[in-house]
Image 1 (tube, helix red, strand yellow):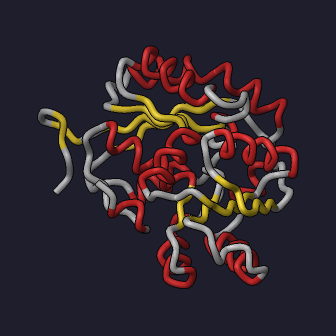
Image 2: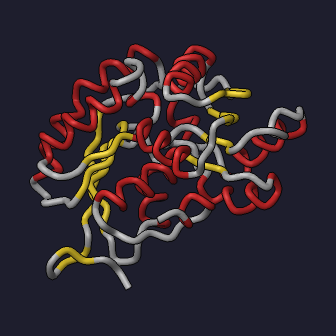
Length: 243
Protein backbone atom coordinates (compact mmCIF):
# COMPACT_ATOMS: atom_id res chain seq x y z
CA UNK A 1 0.00 0.00 0.00
CA UNK A 2 1.34 3.42 -0.86
CA UNK A 3 1.80 6.17 1.70
CA UNK A 4 -0.53 9.12 1.37
CA UNK A 5 -0.68 12.69 2.59
CA UNK A 6 -4.32 13.59 3.14
CA UNK A 7 -6.16 12.25 0.10
CA UNK A 8 -3.20 12.02 -2.28
CA UNK A 9 0.03 10.09 -2.78
CA UNK A 10 3.29 11.42 -1.35
CA UNK A 11 5.11 13.78 -3.72
CA UNK A 12 8.90 13.79 -3.68
CA UNK A 13 10.73 16.81 -5.07
CA UNK A 14 14.05 16.02 -6.72
CA UNK A 15 16.72 18.60 -7.58
CA UNK A 16 19.19 17.20 -10.12
CA UNK A 17 21.97 18.38 -12.44
CA UNK A 18 20.64 18.99 -15.95
CA UNK A 19 22.76 16.16 -17.37
CA UNK A 20 21.66 13.59 -14.78
CA UNK A 21 19.73 10.74 -16.43
CA UNK A 22 19.80 8.26 -13.53
CA UNK A 23 18.30 9.77 -10.38
CA UNK A 24 14.74 10.12 -11.66
CA UNK A 25 14.52 6.58 -13.11
CA UNK A 26 16.00 5.03 -9.95
CA UNK A 27 13.70 7.01 -7.65
CA UNK A 28 10.68 5.99 -9.72
CA UNK A 29 11.76 2.36 -9.95
CA UNK A 30 12.68 1.85 -6.32
CA UNK A 31 10.52 4.43 -4.54
CA UNK A 32 7.32 3.55 -2.66
CA UNK A 33 4.36 2.43 -4.76
CA UNK A 34 2.12 5.36 -5.61
CA UNK A 35 4.71 7.99 -4.70
CA UNK A 36 5.28 10.54 -7.44
CA UNK A 37 8.61 12.16 -8.28
CA UNK A 38 8.82 15.77 -9.50
CA UNK A 39 12.17 17.10 -10.69
CA UNK A 40 13.79 20.50 -11.08
CA UNK A 41 17.10 20.77 -12.93
CA UNK A 42 20.27 22.85 -12.48
CA UNK A 43 22.76 23.45 -15.33
CA UNK A 44 25.70 21.04 -15.36
CA UNK A 45 27.39 19.14 -18.18
CA UNK A 46 30.73 18.07 -16.70
CA UNK A 47 31.45 16.95 -13.16
CA UNK A 48 34.21 19.43 -12.40
CA UNK A 49 34.88 21.71 -9.45
CA UNK A 50 34.03 24.85 -11.43
CA UNK A 51 30.73 23.55 -12.84
CA UNK A 52 29.65 22.07 -9.51
CA UNK A 53 30.41 25.36 -7.80
CA UNK A 54 28.35 27.32 -10.32
CA UNK A 55 25.49 24.80 -10.16
CA UNK A 56 25.01 25.24 -6.42
CA UNK A 57 23.85 28.82 -7.03
CA UNK A 58 20.67 27.46 -8.66
CA UNK A 59 19.66 25.09 -5.85
CA UNK A 60 17.46 27.45 -3.86
CA UNK A 61 15.55 28.60 -6.94
CA UNK A 62 14.92 24.96 -7.85
CA UNK A 63 13.50 24.32 -4.37
CA UNK A 64 11.26 27.38 -4.67
CA UNK A 65 9.87 26.04 -7.95
CA UNK A 66 9.25 22.58 -6.47
CA UNK A 67 7.20 24.24 -3.73
CA UNK A 68 4.73 25.21 -6.48
CA UNK A 69 4.02 21.48 -6.89
CA UNK A 70 3.20 21.10 -3.18
CA UNK A 71 5.83 18.41 -2.70
CA UNK A 72 6.13 16.75 0.70
CA UNK A 73 9.92 16.70 0.85
CA UNK A 74 12.84 17.75 -1.34
CA UNK A 75 16.06 15.91 -2.18
CA UNK A 76 19.12 17.61 -3.64
CA UNK A 77 20.41 14.65 -5.62
CA UNK A 78 24.06 15.38 -6.33
CA UNK A 79 26.84 13.92 -4.21
CA UNK A 80 29.81 16.12 -5.08
CA UNK A 81 27.52 19.12 -5.54
CA UNK A 82 26.52 18.87 -1.88
CA UNK A 83 30.06 18.45 -0.51
CA UNK A 84 32.05 20.67 -2.87
CA UNK A 85 32.44 23.46 -0.32
CA UNK A 86 33.63 21.19 2.47
CA UNK A 87 32.30 20.17 5.88
CA UNK A 88 29.15 21.96 6.96
CA UNK A 89 28.06 22.97 3.45
CA UNK A 90 25.74 19.94 3.22
CA UNK A 91 23.89 20.95 6.39
CA UNK A 92 23.68 24.58 5.27
CA UNK A 93 22.34 23.45 1.90
CA UNK A 94 19.62 21.38 3.53
CA UNK A 95 18.59 24.31 5.71
CA UNK A 96 18.46 26.69 2.73
CA UNK A 97 16.40 24.25 0.64
CA UNK A 98 14.00 23.56 3.50
CA UNK A 99 13.45 27.29 3.95
CA UNK A 100 12.90 27.79 0.21
CA UNK A 101 10.55 24.83 -0.27
CA UNK A 102 8.75 25.02 3.06
CA UNK A 103 9.11 21.25 3.55
CA UNK A 104 11.85 18.93 4.85
CA UNK A 105 14.91 18.76 2.60
CA UNK A 106 17.88 16.42 2.33
CA UNK A 107 21.14 16.64 0.35
CA UNK A 108 22.92 13.55 -0.93
CA UNK A 109 26.23 14.09 0.88
CA UNK A 110 24.43 14.41 4.21
CA UNK A 111 22.12 11.50 3.33
CA UNK A 112 25.17 9.30 2.74
CA UNK A 113 26.54 10.22 6.17
CA UNK A 114 23.20 9.38 7.79
CA UNK A 115 23.01 6.08 5.89
CA UNK A 116 26.52 4.99 6.89
CA UNK A 117 25.84 5.97 10.48
CA UNK A 118 22.60 3.95 10.43
CA UNK A 119 24.66 0.95 9.32
CA UNK A 120 27.20 1.59 12.13
CA UNK A 121 29.93 1.88 9.52
CA UNK A 122 33.25 3.36 10.61
CA UNK A 123 35.73 2.07 8.02
CA UNK A 124 34.54 2.30 4.41
CA UNK A 125 35.71 1.88 0.83
CA UNK A 126 34.46 4.18 -1.93
CA UNK A 127 34.00 3.61 -5.67
CA UNK A 128 33.24 6.60 -7.90
CA UNK A 129 33.14 7.55 -11.57
CA UNK A 130 34.96 10.83 -10.79
CA UNK A 131 38.31 12.39 -11.54
CA UNK A 132 41.09 12.28 -8.94
CA UNK A 133 40.44 15.89 -7.88
CA UNK A 134 36.84 15.15 -6.90
CA UNK A 135 37.81 11.84 -5.30
CA UNK A 136 40.09 13.75 -2.94
CA UNK A 137 37.32 16.27 -2.16
CA UNK A 138 35.07 13.34 -1.30
CA UNK A 139 37.69 11.62 0.80
CA UNK A 140 38.22 14.82 2.80
CA UNK A 141 34.49 15.24 3.34
CA UNK A 142 33.99 11.66 4.52
CA UNK A 143 36.99 11.78 6.82
CA UNK A 144 35.77 15.07 8.31
CA UNK A 145 32.42 13.32 8.92
CA UNK A 146 34.25 10.74 11.02
CA UNK A 147 34.77 7.84 8.62
CA UNK A 148 38.02 6.06 7.90
CA UNK A 149 38.36 5.74 4.12
CA UNK A 150 40.29 2.55 3.47
CA UNK A 151 40.31 3.10 -0.30
CA UNK A 152 38.74 5.36 -2.90
CA UNK A 153 38.72 4.36 -6.56
CA UNK A 154 37.59 6.63 -9.40
CA UNK A 155 37.03 6.02 -13.09
CA UNK A 156 38.38 9.43 -14.09
CA UNK A 157 35.25 10.54 -15.96
CA UNK A 158 34.20 14.21 -16.14
CA UNK A 159 31.43 14.20 -18.79
CA UNK A 160 28.22 13.51 -16.90
CA UNK A 161 26.47 11.91 -19.87
CA UNK A 162 29.33 9.40 -19.99
CA UNK A 163 28.80 8.63 -16.31
CA UNK A 164 25.08 8.17 -16.98
CA UNK A 165 25.85 5.64 -19.71
CA UNK A 166 27.49 3.28 -17.19
CA UNK A 167 25.51 0.16 -16.26
CA UNK A 168 24.95 -1.53 -12.88
CA UNK A 169 27.32 -4.22 -14.16
CA UNK A 170 30.04 -1.57 -14.42
CA UNK A 171 29.48 -0.58 -10.80
CA UNK A 172 29.60 -4.21 -9.71
CA UNK A 173 32.82 -4.80 -11.64
CA UNK A 174 34.48 -1.73 -10.13
CA UNK A 175 33.71 -2.92 -6.61
CA UNK A 176 34.80 -6.49 -7.34
CA UNK A 177 38.12 -5.19 -8.65
CA UNK A 178 38.61 -3.42 -5.32
CA UNK A 179 37.74 -6.66 -3.54
CA UNK A 180 40.31 -8.52 -5.63
CA UNK A 181 42.94 -6.06 -4.40
CA UNK A 182 42.10 -7.06 -0.82
CA UNK A 183 41.07 -3.59 0.34
CA UNK A 184 37.53 -4.60 1.29
CA UNK A 185 38.41 -7.33 3.77
CA UNK A 186 38.03 -5.20 6.89
CA UNK A 187 35.57 -2.48 5.82
CA UNK A 188 32.17 -1.99 7.43
CA UNK A 189 30.51 -0.79 4.21
CA UNK A 190 31.14 0.06 0.57
CA UNK A 191 29.90 3.35 -0.85
CA UNK A 192 29.16 3.70 -4.59
CA UNK A 193 29.18 7.45 -5.16
CA UNK A 194 27.35 9.62 -7.73
CA UNK A 195 23.62 10.02 -8.33
CA UNK A 196 24.23 9.58 -12.07
CA UNK A 197 25.97 6.21 -11.58
CA UNK A 198 23.38 3.46 -12.17
CA UNK A 199 24.34 1.25 -9.27
CA UNK A 200 21.33 0.67 -7.00
CA UNK A 201 20.28 -2.45 -8.92
CA UNK A 202 23.73 -3.96 -8.29
CA UNK A 203 23.42 -3.75 -4.51
CA UNK A 204 21.78 -7.14 -3.68
CA UNK A 205 24.33 -9.14 -5.66
CA UNK A 206 27.25 -7.13 -4.31
CA UNK A 207 26.09 -7.47 -0.70
CA UNK A 208 25.76 -11.24 -1.17
CA UNK A 209 29.25 -11.46 -2.67
CA UNK A 210 30.97 -9.17 -0.20
CA UNK A 211 29.08 -9.95 2.98
CA UNK A 212 29.00 -6.23 3.76
CA UNK A 213 26.47 -3.42 3.26
CA UNK A 214 26.64 -1.45 0.03
CA UNK A 215 25.31 2.10 -0.07
CA UNK A 216 24.76 4.10 -3.27
CA UNK A 217 24.20 7.83 -3.62
CA UNK A 218 20.65 7.45 -4.91
CA UNK A 219 19.89 4.70 -2.41
CA UNK A 220 20.96 6.87 0.53
CA UNK A 221 19.09 9.90 -0.82
CA UNK A 222 15.89 7.93 -1.50
CA UNK A 223 16.04 6.32 1.96
CA UNK A 224 16.57 9.70 3.61
CA UNK A 225 13.97 11.73 1.71
CA UNK A 226 11.33 9.04 2.21
CA UNK A 227 11.95 9.20 5.96
CA UNK A 228 11.63 12.98 5.75
CA UNK A 229 8.31 12.61 3.92
CA UNK A 230 7.03 9.88 6.30
CA UNK A 231 6.87 7.45 3.39
CA UNK A 232 7.69 3.77 3.82
CA UNK A 233 10.23 2.57 1.27
CA UNK A 234 11.52 -0.89 0.43
CA UNK A 235 14.48 -0.94 -1.95
CA UNK A 236 17.58 -3.09 -2.49
CA UNK A 237 20.12 -3.42 0.29
CA UNK A 238 20.60 -3.67 4.03
CA UNK A 239 20.15 0.08 4.42
CA UNK A 240 16.44 -0.24 3.67
CA UNK A 241 16.04 -2.78 6.46
CA UNK A 242 16.81 0.06 8.89
CA UNK A 243 13.79 1.87 10.25
